[in-house]
Image (cartoon, rainbow, N blue to C red; front, side, top):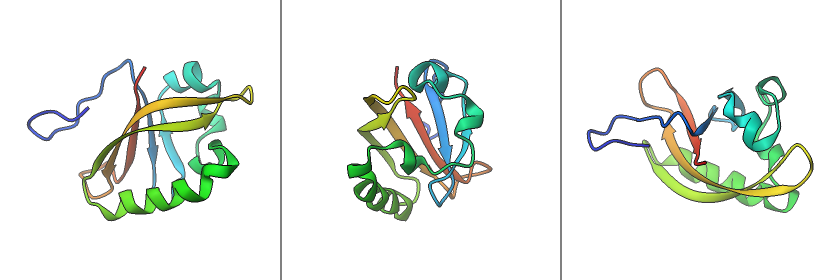
Length: 113
């Protein structure tokens, strides 16, 4: 998702989720419905951590704090996320801390499809 020049490139096949500094969802693309079954309105202003399995929430909050502490950091990982139907699916994601970057001011999560 990040180009050689350091600019952010968005693959339109990816689902994009943007979180604020508290981990609240402030933006999602329509593709999120295809992947997780949720409508955009069901996600906006909700804590992203509530969509993680309960046993992983504390650990993921600590990791999120670490990502926030690293300005302009990009991390690739696999996240377990609760689908609307109740199942847990593992998503390959790229996480970009852009809280200090231009107008974005958030953490951008690209879900690779």
